[in-house]
Amino acid sequence: MTDAPRPELRPRVDRKGKAVSPGVGIGTAYVIERREVAVPHTKIDRELIDEEIGRFHAALKLTKEQLEAIKAKLPSGEHRQILKAQQMMLRDPDLRSRTEAKIREQEINAEWAVAQTTDEIRARLGEISDEYFRERAFDVGFLGERVLMNLAGEALAELSPPPDSVLVAHDLSPADTAQLHGSTVQGILTEVGGQTSHSAIMARALSIPAVVGLEAVTEDVETGDMVIVDAVHRTVIIRPTEAEIEHYRREAERYADFEAEIQKEHALPAVTSDGEHVTLRANVALAEEVPAVRKHGAEGVGLYRTEYLFMNREDAPSEEEHYRMAKRVLQACAPYPVTFRTFDLGSDKRSAVVPSPVPEANPALGLRSMRLAFRHRELFLAQIRGLLRAALHGPLRIMLPLISGAEELESALEAVEAARDQLVEAGLAHAEKVPVGIMIEVPAAAIIADTLASRVDFMSIGTNDLIQYTIAIDRESEEVGYLYDPLHPAILRLISAVCEAGRAHEIPVSVCGEMAADPRYAWVLAGLGVRELSLHPAGVPVIKNIIRASSIDEMHALAAEVAKASSPREARKIVMRRMKERFPEHLEHGAGVESGDEESAAGGS
Image (cartoon, rainbow, N blue to C red; front, top):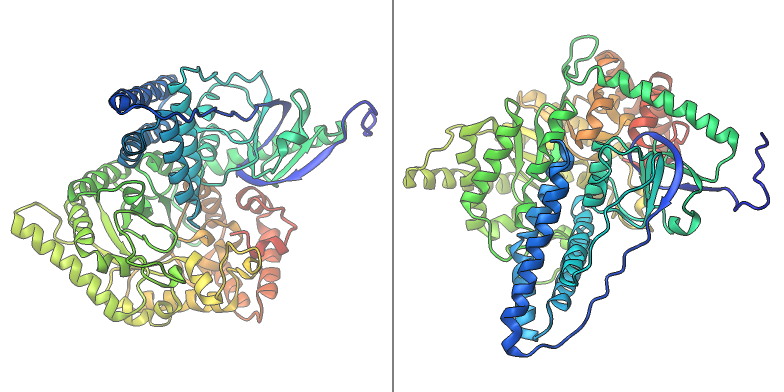
């Protein structure tokens, strides 16, 4: 059959996006039209305010019941847990109190108030540079949409794509994606979304290849078009040739074989061929994500982001809330440890609970993280008390973010002891010995790591901030983001120095930034002395397979060679040449970049 498209057909289209759930799928397109919810703007009489608030509460209840009905059809796992997280968002006091206040104070109908509130919450979340929190803006939008539909008495159609189809949409809610359980959907394409969106997490849980960030893709494809989803190389082909279809059928088989191979080692530790153990843990932000930690073979949690507990609310989380949350996570991860990072707020992660006193010209360098915790000492002490109490239920570690010097560390450690004294005085049971560590995120901390290491039980390198602060760039900036490079010689020297300090003081050193999740850097990090990596759960199997197939000697050799490089470009060439020789499929399947794409390695971590 000829490869040339017939004249009556629309032309072939080749697109690149972000691969968020790996795999290769081929099927006919099923385009979901973007839903537009009409929001009536109506002023109401004061005597109808309570009735309107009652309508709002009824819509929340119905929304919760709808999500419960979808959840009930699913087996246990990540998809059920994420729908549960959506139900918890419906109880968000910020959503409820803001909406009720607008109805009372502005004397407007519930639909108008809900739309205003969700827009405000989405805007606040959208300003955060951390992708995880940015993606929650989409979740809020979908929940708001469902509540508005229920207020209007409109039924939300269930998602029922035809067999062997590829879903194409502006975006999919977690509830939409959950309905795909048991279906034969071959792939998902969306115009927006990212690696940490709940719909991406659920696509991975359902093993559906997904590529997102395909701007205006719904304009390129029509229902019935043949589509290839290559979520290994971030490629989408719309209306492919017969030769391309045959080629990607073989690619799908090859990928399935690779997945089956690395899953054989799911329950095994990441031990090199010469007996060196590299501990692989997971980064999570919600208790609902913990099942993915066990599913993908991680040895506990290396970074639990507690700041989500402070977001989208007006009242501070209590000591009891901290205790219950931590206890739940520890029990779910047993017998493995969980490292809870104390709240890392400020800068772009703002909370009404922990406000900065004045607007700052450069908030990334201002009152944030531990500096903000010192300003709001009682909130910090409440969190520490809750964590110390929870430590009775499992191996808990406390991690202090953005420590820049010895005096700052001493103040933080004194606060931990003060919280312990308060528990003693109150007669509340708590763990006597809880490991306390720090994040190394600023060059100052890395340079004096030998001094800091003498006062703590472990250190964790946050490469995302360390790279930005060292190179003096904003990785989100379109103008200078290209300079963001994990293989910059300065970054490698700082990581090496921190590892050396850890060895000298016999404390573990981990990396919990995005660099830890990239197969291109696994040998370099282990070769520099890192013995613990913490990454998103789905990335664990590929990194584990690389480590188990390698010797620590060859990792040391690569790190030593890279350390001599005079520029990031030279370092990249060295790393990519060696890793392509040994792990060509791992680079493709784990990093989401083409194995020959050396230049993309600069900013891909």
